[in-house]
Length: 551
Image 1 (tube, rainbow, N blue to C red):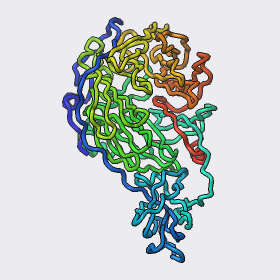
Image 2: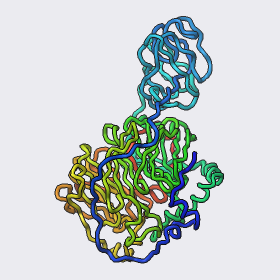
Image 3: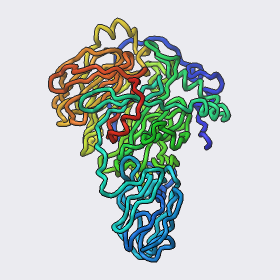
């Protein structure tokens, strides 16, 4: 894959330092002229490429099947099927019978779902022995038996149709950015269930980076851009940016930040092997989003391009991309999966652009994209970087944090304007620690936002304040301020929407905030420098395969 070269890269190559590339100083600026919301812009641009069709996934291993049964080898008259037919060997599965297709949804714990109904002349494609290839068959490793057949062996994964599916557990996935691990917390009891190393291939990927001239030059620049003025944990090393689990809970997807790639890991095996990895079209892989059906993954390719890549979640293949503002950041699918919302933050790298020179940080846009054609349908223009945001289900309101703003705004997406804001005072800790705007971590005063299930309260992370604010959406008034640990940086709702999980990057922990009580209910230790966290559901037997370390 060829990385797109931008003016940013040309300047950066000359010095291997973002600060020098932009010729910017680190002079402090007084706190004034608070950021304001943006305005709507009309029109849109076409995205790159068309949506690719998913390929058919594998079924179970070959087996004898009864007449007309759906499943591994179906229908009367099949080459190795039908009454009295001999089972075919091997994990790839036997040839199809004269009728029947396998098109069920994905099963859990590697077990395939029940085959589709018989159709004339239908055929079942045999996939690889260990991994699915997406499409209608889902991510299963083996097929269930049809109405008259039996499941073939596939490494012991074939199951009888009468076997009940494993119990699923709600989990909070926590990306420990410096540690390169993911912690799994019980979404309801908040217990740390264990962790998983998601950079076991770091040496392999580093070799691939070093073999690519552009990536080789870019890597130290990206690392330098990650530095913080205060509380820097690891000289710019960051290995987990975003993370999701497949709908069936068997595959973990990770956007791996400085490594510039996305990787998928098999949760059904004790070794958690990597299923695939893909470099995005820029040296840094940023925020991501998984489509509601679990088939696609959109990842912001940040640095040398203004693009977000859309990947096939089953194969890792890039299906296409769409144009964004400068330094694309957060991605969100609409509830129905028809649209993607992408926001950009501009250049917020370490010592790259000062508060006074905010106008030179690049275009800060919120865009609405057709999830199938990748065409940009609408653009909203902002003066300041759009930090974490929440868009309501009816797509009428966006609550957003902005660069430098010590609070959160309410933005009318229909009218294209800010309607209200919660502008909060700096805490004593912030006043003592941060001398000026240019010392804020990547221009963020507040970074981390969640909306309660009833839509009445916001969980607003005061990153420089070491606080979490509960803000009432009706009037945007401050209800409660809660002191927490160091550098609160991300917020995610609990499954029941009654609690807010806050990543305490500087304390290596998750703070559990009770929306209604306005109190900290629990603090859970995780790994080094937790940032992004996401909800998911995982089969309980698979959680026993995790490392017992907290992160």
